[in-house]
Amino acid sequence: MESIGYLWIIPLLPLLAFLTIIFITRPFPRLSGIVCILSIFGSFLVSLWALWSLIVTFSAHGGEEALRQQLTLVWFSSGPVALPIGLVLDPLTAIMLLVVTSVSLLVQIYSQGYMAGDPGYSRYFAFMALFTMSMLGLVLSNNFVQLYITWELVGLCSYLLIGFWYQKPEAAAAAKKAFITTRLGDLGLLVGILILYLTTGSFVFTDIEHAIAAGAIGGGVLTLAAVLVFCGAIGKSAQFPLHVWLPDAMEGPTPVSALIHAATMVAAGVYLVARTFQMFAAAPDSLIVVAYIGGFTALFAASMGLVMNDIKRVMAYSTISQLGYMMMGLGVGAYTAGVFHLFNHAFFKALLFLGSGSVIHAMHDQDMRNMGGLGGKMKITFITMTVAALALAGFPPFSGFWSKDEILAGASHKDSVLYAMGLITAFMTAFYIFRAIFMTFTGEHRGQKEHHGEHGQHGHAIHESPLVMTIPLMLLAIPAFLSGFLGSPMLNNAFGAFLTFGEEAHAEIDWNVMTSSVVVAVLGIFLAWVVYYAKLISAESIGRTFAPIYTMLSRKYWVDELYLWIIDNVVLGISNLALWFDTNIIDGVVNGIGYSISGLGGLLRRLETGRVPNYGLAIFAGTIIITGIILVAGRTP
Image (cartoon, rainbow, N blue to C red; front, side, top):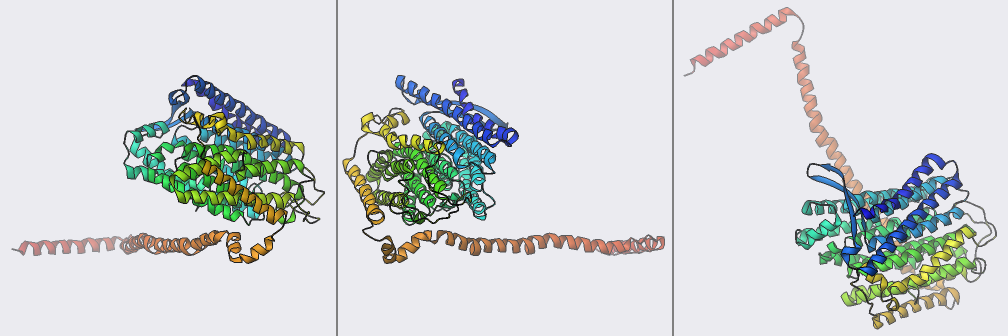
């Protein structure tokens, strides 16, 4: 077991980078960036070694026993309660370590160019190092205690980075919104963890799995615990109804958005469900909840992505939708498909966000209505973003096609309603992402002479981003195109076989599902081409024709307004009632007792005059009264 102790190096390196930047290199911005990049590069190398060691073991032995290694230590104990800390190395951990470290490394390199000149440059890299450390610690956790601590650290870092430009009221408000909204889900997660501990006596995942397999937890209690744990995933992965924080999180720097949306915060929710999947599988009703919330969120968010004009918000709603897709995959029991889509999505979504950042860096504007014609001036950004868009749209043979197809196949065998939701979502996804591509890169340039962007710079000639920003784009384009083949029949579903300890060694193609998937993707791309490239149909006329629907989508179904109304009229009403009860009843009783005692004390104080004749009179009167009582009592028969 001690053989995996080296894994502590993976989160330790970015933690040391955070401390180094805060206490030593903060006055030297460029050095701070280098420290952050080197630390994450070191974590990436160790993660590669861990993955390679598992692949070698899998090739030689296979099986869960050989591929799941743990190291558990007692962090704190008091009586019968012991809080563990430890590591787990299995295929899921190794895959996620590779995703987090590789995407984070490329985002940090990209940030060297994007954040150049920002007065908070060192602070930015310190927070990014801490953010990466938190997610790596979460992925390596073999118990709920460590997972919950790092889970909350991820939330804290997202608050710090979303509100990085805290001088902007919008950024400060978005950070608070993200922090408070995710706290609601985290409360459910905490209660779920406590239920599991009280029923199994352990926080360690494998102990809980063994207890579930032995029937130590009743079906109703297990379902309740699973749904509560899923509440945490709903908050972190921005699933309905706690999705409202993610679009506003775009107020942070674009590289932050790339890391949050691709490999860290939002991935944590899906990872949590995948890590505890045996618990969900043992409580089928909880899987139904996961599937339908995921399917609805996928469709719901994709519909809003159709009308967004802010390029980053298009990507934000795309992320919410794709996370819903992953949840739907896990919910219908397609465990491999859900994790595979998480893996593929990390690369092409990071590419889409960094590509959007490249556009914003050139335009100093996020509104796609002010863009157009950028393809000829920003060829690398255009080509790489198109690769990512094809992957997101599920166009073969790009990466998203393979994992999306597996999720649809799982849904088609489980629930026709979910399958229909998945197909409609796939059509919308293809349409809105190519709407963004055509509006941004094709046609005539619609921009103004002067723009103000995230850094507040003034306009200048549009140009391609520097190499420090375009090299990460080109590197991310490689897995955006190729990573899907890991789960294809051509490689005997190598991804699924590795992830499931050899149980899914072959991938079967459902030709009906594949055909439907490709058809809806092509139709979505074609319709976007008709409206936004060829302009055979006017987008404005479509908006006027379907004005009520357009208004509803652009206002995001009025969910934010509904929540504000609930807060103003229900939550504040309950708060005011509680305040009245506390002030008039609780404080009234407590203060009333105090006032009564004080009044009685005032009366008694008058007897304490300090004059001897008064005391003598009191003694004489008391003696007479006592004597009278004795005489009366003595005559009573």
